[in-house]
Length: 326
Image 1 (tube, helix red, strand yellow):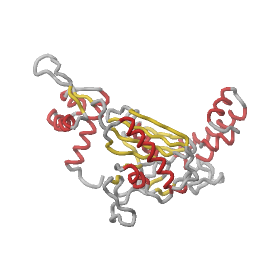
Image 2 (cartoon, rainbow, N blue to C red):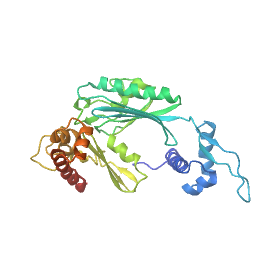
Image 3 (cartoon, rainbow, N blue to C red):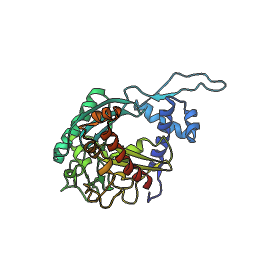
Image 4 (cartoon, rainbow, N blue to C red):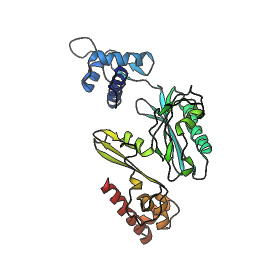
């Protein structure tokens, strides 16, 4: 951060602590939340009361616990608001609705090859899936998260509100949402603004980030330091240091798939040569093994077929080299 933390920033941080503690505990009294978070009981109360009033949290009946006033545990309300998640991969599309308690209320995934599609067609499909999830859960939607397999600029405004109906030509300076700098496996997305495109279709604010960065963010509770790897047609990566996602100066840190392991190797969609992805990506491994999909490859490996074993072994070395470099 480049500015001092003000009251709104502190409130968001403290609210995040309280909600995380509630997710972990399932339900807790205000005193227990204060003990878990290190906040004062008064601070916890000021954060909890608006959520009770909004129906996000509910309060249990009072439970006597020794001397003093009986405590009342608070917990997430069933049927409370949800956030929608959309993952646009090279050949799949997935959507989910997740409550603030971390429980997935609805999930759908389908095969959809995006490589030959223009951005408008990609986001038409991406918008249809969360709309179906929203209808299935029947809950209030807080916002939408979008995860494309792309390198994104760090826009000055990563979230575009649904009320902002301006197109790119009319948008005031300084409100640009992130732009796709490069999508090696979906090059037709280069230069588009995914958050804007999906917000137009859904009518909700949209937050967008690289799919592997968001994957790393989802695993923050596993360890304070880790490298997250996503493997499909492409190979992505995210780095967690000290319990926080490390983005690097331009927000591009952790791009494991484009670590060069052989400068004389095959050309990559990113513009380089000999990248990890060209050896360990699903397309490369399937072609080397002579398999049409992952299930036939897994079956061939289970039978010990020499070509399948050799192909996966050859893919392991550059992937290991990329991880060692990271």
